[in-house]
Amino acid sequence: MNRKNVAILGIIICSIYFIVTFGLIITSSPILLTAMELITMVSGLLMIMLVLVIPFTKTEKMVNYKIIATVFSAACMILTNGTHMVNLTVTEQLLKMGIDVPYYLQIGKWPSVEMAIDYLAWGLFMGLAFLFSFLGIEKEKIHKQIKITLCVNGFLCLVGFFGAILINQNIWYIAPMGYGLGTMLLCFELLILNKRIKLT
Image (tube, rainbow, N blue to C red):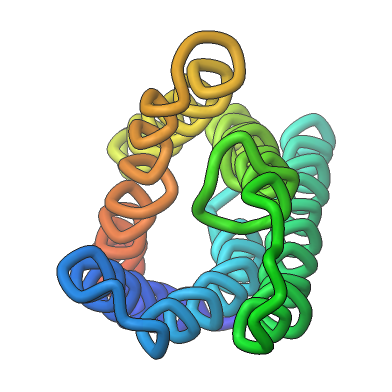
């Protein structure tokens, strides 16, 4: 898998996600809501590819960390894709038919079954994927910034998750700083790393 291509794809997907989300907040457009859900599903696949191109140290211990990080990112993808697929094909269709779907079965509401699963995916599982990726890289100068970003991303995701379920749902908005802005930063860092490796 080509690290440069994955990083560029990540920057593009993150940029589209931010633009669509911003537009959705301003307009509450159903079309933008559908677009955001589709982009979120694609983002789940991106996270697996991203973990696979992270420069893990090639020792037995570090390879195990890579496997664990990949499993957690795959769990994130499966849960979030399942949640958004159900919302697109069932919940949204029922609402369009005029059927009163309870808030606890809608995405974007809290408390909600769909949101709880999405929080589990992006908060807990993606947070752990970031942290195990952090653990899988030895302290080499060339990888220092990537390690820091992975650690911060994981921490923000976990704080958002546990804060939302234990204290206040609004704490969740810390998590997107990790898996959203943090992922874009990570993609730029991977591009820089790729360029440095070619120059050496």
